[in-house]
Length: 248
Image (cartoon, rainbow, N blue to C red; front, side, top):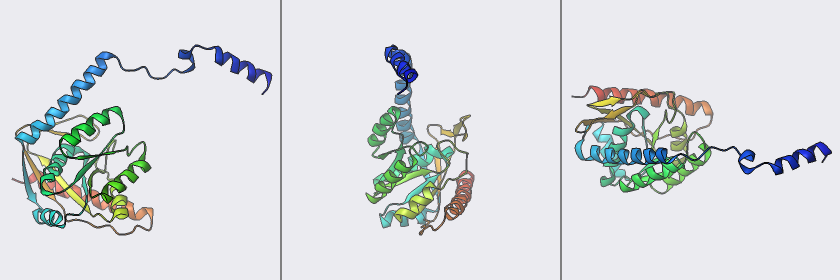
């Protein structure tokens, strides 16, 4: 170590701790309180929808019944815009024997959502597809091996909207669980000015669900195969959502 490097090291050692590490300040009490209230409001909203909204299968009931009869895991797929109606539809299948799982961030907020998921008898799968993609995929594979059907929102969490990524295709290929496409529409909803223009269903509305035929994915030999299937998957989901939206 030369003399200048040694002096720099000594200077850093004399610095106060707050100058050595300028990390993010912890959130204020007001922000923590607001976050807690918003989380509990979300949990209450989910319960309200479960208690007041009706779920109607408008297309593909035979595919749903066949899937439930087989009692083996599937990889449910939907658009992030329809997260609420499609998610609550999947939740309604728990009583009929489907073990449903959702990928939830490993963050502090994710811990709260994991508790909410368990309260609704849904399995939280901890991982982030955007930050720890490899670990998230491993967690999803293990979940399927334990009989869980993990819901996949192929254009989430950041988009672009209605461009399905390859994660669900790769998961289906690795596990042998077929893709299970869910087109969903709420009869009445608010639309959020978010990247996906999310639909927030209103209480006492009707969830219209169109289910696609289960789609098994064999072994993938090249990256472009997964990309081609993901593109087809997006097209099929668009069609199913259109059927659900136009149903009487």
